[in-house]
View 1 (tube, rainbow, N blue to C red):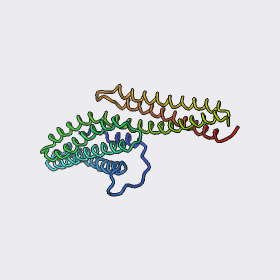
View 2 (cartoon, one colour; view 1 turned 180 degrees about the vertical axis):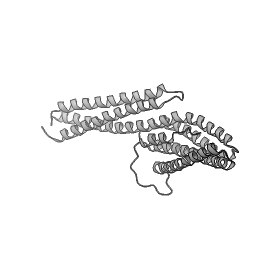
View 3 (cartoon, rainbow, N blue to C red; view 1 turned 30 degrees about the vertical axis):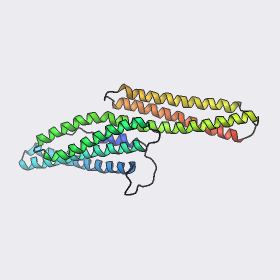
View 4 (cartoon, rainbow, N blue to C red; view 1 turned 90 degrees about the horizontal axis):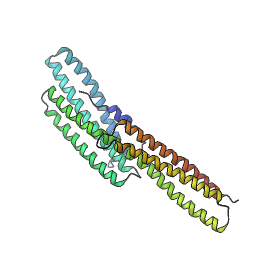
Length: 270
């Protein structure tokens, strides 16, 4: 009856770099609080799973009414904890996407709608679980959640890529703003004749090349995800896309180093 690799969620989620911010106030619900809710519910699920394994083993061994009752209660607790873990995980990645600067606004709204639908489903499914009268009924409820999880999984990957991609876009936008200012400044220097700008202009081209490479890698990342369209995005396509985004970010780090060199060169006279 266990189908849900919650540990996979945990590994996927901690791969998203946490934003540095102050501890939220009790009235504030942000990513950090949503993430804490998920970790809390994940811990409940983990403990419920241990109880489930124990009572399931006893039931299969003894087949008594008492062991059956214990197995039923343990299974019910496990399924409720599993729904709660999924609900809070979806809420956490929604908040992370919402707070990620650079994420595409239209894409965010589409993902928000999908996430909200899945959160609502798991809440209602959780509420319906106590109505199951037997272990067999719980197995049926578990299978429904299994089918829903298969629907959810591509959404997890798509949202995590949108988060990582948004961070890349945000950094690149800032660099392009700085680059535009530097090009204007170099043009002023060239006109005034205060400094030979040939080296600076060549370095500008080198920096633009790095940023262009970053854009190419970003598009390759989205292409990997697009190939898994129609609800079939896999762990493999997600990992490939994430790798491309890391390459994209690496080019931006190199571009940032170039920008620093250009700024330092401008400061010094020939």
